[in-house]
Structure formats: structure tokens, C-alpha cells
Image (cartoon, rainbow, N blue to C red):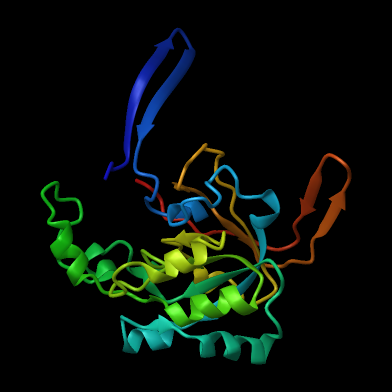
Length: 251
């Protein structure tokens, strides 16, 4: 895949006048990024087609750190979601399910993050061998089924490299969710600062026609006692909590 590259296109720095313009090139699914439903859904929303109202979502945070400490291949279960509901009430309509595994803290150590000692930056990386070795938590296929059948969610976000666990194989969670127009966020960080409920996530990707995903900067408002001001042309949100950026830097 195309690694992130930033190059100078033009620069002027003369007599107190400064101008610079740069080119960037990268794969869509790099660092903290959004998967559009079109990533695994042939006829589903591409990154430019996701409705704006689906990109502002009440947060349901499932904390499974302790379970992942005991089992790095842990898959989040339906029971984990039911346990959240028993404490916090029903999952709000249009919610995003954020899964805190504790993996965001491992991002600076790629061997620990992916569970393989192979260097992902090696241009001669044997991807097949690497994919067979990787090991990290994700959602269970059963939870994906439950979210589709019995809940009205906008999307799912994880602090790991994938919605699917490393050992999942053919990405069943991606396929099930995204063919139902549910977006995904991967490689999140700072989920330990996000409350289990009562917060709002905002994740606005650029409108790239036919894009299957893109690196973005999602943020969470930790206190959702906000006021929507609606008129025929605009929707303005006034935030009262602390904004937390959930992205990992590209460089």
C-alpha cells in the first residue's frame, strides 16, 4: 500500500513574503481513519455519501481492557453490550459503539500492537505471513449480527488496527456492518478519557467521491448537554464539555 508521503510542491521565502504548497500521497486506510460502508459494501455509501447526521453520534463506550489483558485475541461479545445496557440504559438511536481494549497505548510499538515481530515498514514484507501472525482484539461476528438486527447505530470505533480481531480471517465484522451502511473508525486513541455514556462523537471525513475510507480527526465532546439550533439552512452545535481528539498522528 502507499505509505504516507509529504513533499514540497512549491515554496517562496523572499523579502518577508512566505508561501508554501505541498503534495500528499497515502493509502486511504492509514493511522486513525474512517472506513466508509463502501469499503466492504459494493453498492453502499462511499466516504462522500455518508449523511452528515450519521457523523455526529451519541457514544456507547464498551470497556473491555481487563478482558483483553487476559486474552489479546478477545472478541467483544453481545453480553458485553448487554452489561453496558444494564448499567447505563438502552443504546441511543444513531449511536456509535466505541470499544476500549487498551490497544491505543501500544501504537508506538508495532510488534506489540499487531502481535507480530515482522516490520510493517519493510518494503519486502511478506504480507501473507504477517497476516497469519497478527493478534489483537476486535468485535465478534455475533455482536455485529446483534447490532444490525436489534440496534440503530451509525457506526463502530476501535482502538485497534481493525474492527475484526487479528485472527478473524476474512473480515466478517467489516462485511456484516458495512453492507448495512455502518461506518467504522480504526486506530483510535485516548478512549480512556471518554466516559461510558453521555458523550458525543464527531467524525467528519472529506468528501472524496468513490472513496472507501480516509484518515480523519475524530473528536468527542465529553458532556453532551449541548443545544441544537435548527433552521432551514444550518445546524449549529454548542458544546459544553471537554473535546478529546481520538487520532494517532500520521508522522
